[in-house]
Length: 409
Image 1: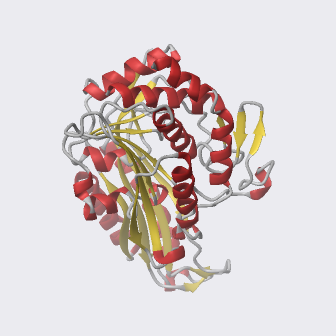
Image 2: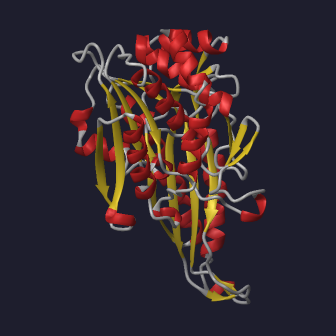
């Protein structure tokens, strides 16, 4: 049985490139990033899967008036298992991608897949179309040969992962939570390393904030007549970075970097000319906090530093949270993690290790509800970069891992 599966997957390179090519040419960028959403990509994928023999398909569309068709689609493909009473095995990937970024840094059209021997290049080919394509090949390896998985398999293709999952897994859990049962387990091919040895079992808590400082506009030659919001905002940025880093200073070797990070990122424009003291200023912060620190403790310290800056500069500061996500860990000795570790060693010949990451994945939403979720794939780690690429060998090798998980988990 294993030989039949591996033979099918090894002969599916052209099929993988076909699917990646078609997915690549359909940008699925969120409205927050200036796109139309995932509808075109989802409709193509739905019809393609049906034509390939995966006929048990369901759509769950989150309403979003900003997106094409007014929806952000989520698609589920089901492969019935031998034991329907057991918990389901889910493989979850996301359809949305990030914008290409600076066009001049690309050597080719980011929406037109380019093949270079074992490498395919284009926006989204790794993040997250590699995992998506591998999961589809694994399912086809069973379905096209009449093999039935151990338990029912669900391939879930979600929207909005790149911008917080409000229209993806978070929306599904809040509006269709009955899809996910207590004994279900999850594999999320959305983070990994070049040899496939790292299984992500925990994530840092994530806090994204936008700080608005309001002062009083004045002429640049008379700063004493104003209250410089830009100066206060800069002071806030520095004090938050050093104050929070000192307060929450623990280290955890499971993570890299092994400490909490507090970084000022986006800076919004204020006044258009040099000789005006700004009356308003906006900075944004990206905070990735070790799980030992509850985010409510971080926010208490944020408020303390904010009040100190307000008093010093005679300004007012407010903030909005764009992400506030805490995540419980999956036990490193959970049965599905141990099985994944064994199968990865069987396919790739590498010993695995549990790790934590600073990035956020959909696993956090599932873990917080008590589900075991492992995040794993063999990655080139070119996500979000110009000339993003994936390796065909990784797509096929990961499909072998997923197919054996379907048969034995």
